Length: 256
Image (cartoon, rainbow, N blue to C red; front, side, top):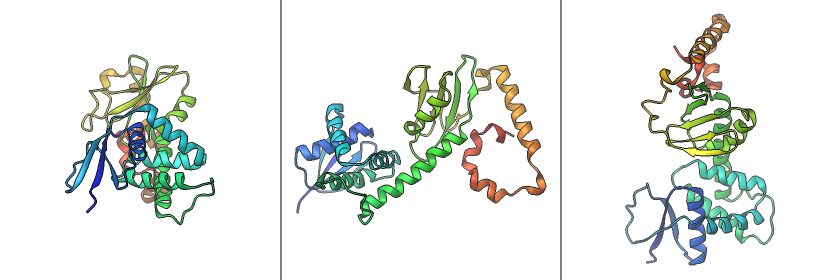
């Protein structure tokens, strides 16, 4: 019986691509890629801990870019950000299929892995657009606009261009409390940050950290939002369809 080789990586995109490089470099025929945070209960397996190597990752990605269209590249990255368990192995099959092609042709949706990646990418894309619409910033005393979010998928890398363009003249932080990291724009570049004071329990920014004007603005916005709602035309079902309830705790207009 052929034993499977399980490649353990750190969960990063470069780490995943480093696994792909290792598979091709060592001609591994029966691999499984798994995050180090996931447990392994399988018998008769060989385990390899893969150290993230940016040079190896770039070699794989450059090769993929030569064979895949920009649309396929975007779908590939979006699917990785879904964090769905086992998505790495679907992506591996996808990339093997792309590398095996002699020419770059249109996407073959008859291939189950390609179809799955496309479907997952659309789900991630929808979540990206929701985050762009539902992020609510609060101005802190140190003049940084700060927002907390808890998206279903790891979409922070995808929303950077939108907020960088829209708020180019302001310092801002968007913090994902589910994954415990954030993106910070310092007027020049984007930095990845970790803030210990945020958690799933304490997801709101302390009112002590906000400017007095920000508190007044939030009250004004909440009052305005409630005043324009016409009770006779209220449609809760449609409202929740466009604005899912799981986002409400981050919206200024939904503060009681």
